[in-house]
Length: 432
Ligand code: NAD
Image 1 (spheres, rainbow, N blue to C red):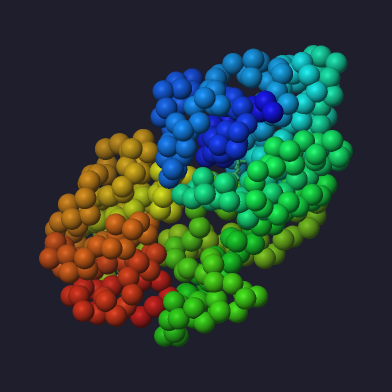
Image 2 (cartoon, rainbow, N blue to C red; image 1 turned 120 degrees about the vertical axis):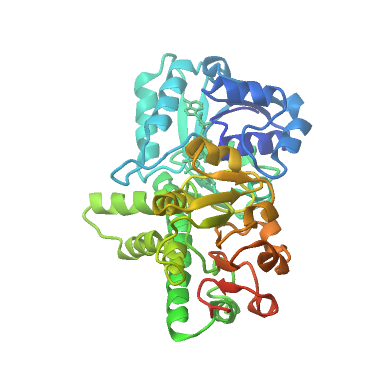
């Protein structure tokens, strides 16, 4: 089957590479020529564990181009995996998706199934189909299918090759059959439904996970006030199979390119239809506050951060990715700088991207030790393994003032008790 994929970001490129790994001939299209040049030379433009290796293993079935016309004209299936970022009012910006739809209409010369992988508001697949059909340049049949993506950044390749489910939203059987053929080697349950339900499955899944995170964060905040321990509480809750033990890690809230925008987009859509999604609104509000939790905690130790050496461990929104979209550091580091702090930051792969936003006002360090040297306070924003496995004795050895404010509960309190440091984490007793 000849497949083309529009967009070579975290979803598009991973999809293309994993389909090639499953014996399909795949052409990946992007408008950014520098990305295409990198991929042609075997370099992935994004960091995702295992991606570059799998891409290079499948180069004979993978093609990269900016020439969408050539890529789409005789494709059996075209996946749309371009971004749907948040607009200022919270709704989804669909201009990239519609842009691809127009390019498809102008290019296809044979019957084709267009598969929407991008996360799009309920009803968008219908609009994409109408748009393509109204602008077709050749007399061909086009079917639009919704096939939302559930991968997580940091584990995207594994999540795609061993996906929890394949959701197929179609209005005509022929589109569903073609997609089943695409996924015939994938060992996963397939849920076939109509397009609107498939679109809703994606939003409902993401918003439920966001809600679970905000819920545990609120319980953590209350644990701190009343003297309970969130780690024990979450463990006790997680044994109940109705609750499950995943996504119960208290911290400084969710970030990334999906949960923040997908909660706001569904809330916006509900409002548009005169319905208030109260639970989703609560998840959004709790998350906004939670992001600022570490700075607020620092006020217990300092009136402000003026003139202090501040060590920041972790810049990305989660470990395993170089992505900074909606990372808590993007709001916290400017606040530290406003306060007058000398910010020194470490991240194993996020520094280059962070430098694009803060080229000069942050000192970047290439080891945790270098970051902590003479620091008055350390903030942990990302639970990288290097942080979790860092020898706790080093904090007091290296820092001027060993105060560690941990937004990701990287250490168990018993280990911290044997180190000489102040350790303030989320939803747990502070260790002095
Ligand atoms: P991204 O920003 O990483 O990548 C989008 C890519 O599309 C960019 O490389 C851009 O240059 C390219 N592009 C834009 N217009 C194009 C066009 N006309 N033709 C070809 N390429 C074009 O985005 P992403 O994170 O991969 O997300 C894509 C979609 O998937 C979004 O709707 C997102 O909500 C959804 N999603 C993302 C994730 C995730 O973890 N990132 C998970 C599930 C679903």
